[in-house]
Length: 397
Image 1 (cartoon, rainbow, N blue to C red):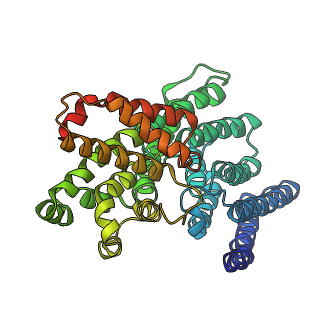
Image 2: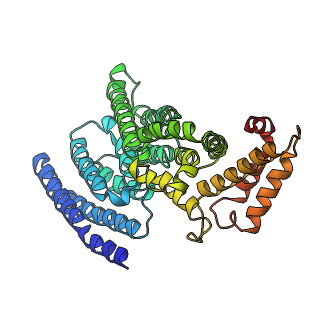
Image 3: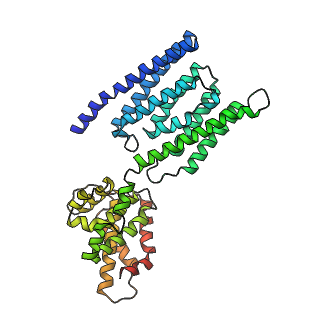
């Protein structure tokens, strides 16, 4: 109840940047129209549509915030979106004085979608694109080509939780901008294209490429992978905690190493947090004995969630498991059983398939997989991966 009440109070505060945006857009349109001596009807029409567009943007952001539909950590940093939107407003008014071939709207579409969600980003960008299009009286084809490029760019760069690949999406989005400008601006001219016709479009391509590259790099570092450096330190087998564990209890240390191998391999096949599950696998036995290790060493939130679910697995503290936790539980059980079997028997060729099947049956009976986010396809693939690792199991001796 307190969380919901806090959300509603913030919901009211969200009107402030929205109202400021409306006033800024209206004042900007008035100033540009006065400077350019634009007709009153065009100025008034653009002002009304722009104000309504900002209101629609604010409504969309507030709705997605209340329904937890914003991507990444955008719900905790709504000011980031509005600052980006105000920057887009400034770029929008600047475009009134620029050639239509040089409008840098591709980065604006991508930026606003990353700071909110694809739908909210496209809606807000359309509002910004509409302002120079109406004030400068450009043809509908210009509006359409930038809208098409923007949506294509948003589609290429959305959902970057697992791996940020800049090269191919950047190339394709800039290529789409080049093709659209060629088809919508240069080729339709009533004369043969000259070299100078390509100067502004090429400058736009270069500028958009630089802005997109910097945006994605900064966004991936600060938002998508904010814990990349801590994970590199914690997941290093030479970390002082693991080195101490190796000296005091080699069995516990190598149990974590083997468990991490399977967790990393499986997580790499699916949409899982590889760093978090690898960290949880290395330290799950250590944390089980001393949960304060997580706080003392500032484990990232993703790893903490998995480890807390693992620790509370037998106390019924969780109604459902994350994918990562279910995989950790399964890998931990399989490594434990095979290690125990290899130590207790002299059998040179144990039936690893039987062990894997029995572990999956056990978790199926306990509904561990049923209460997790694992899909049936992922479950089948995971079962197959464990059966394929017969050669690796020999290292558990």
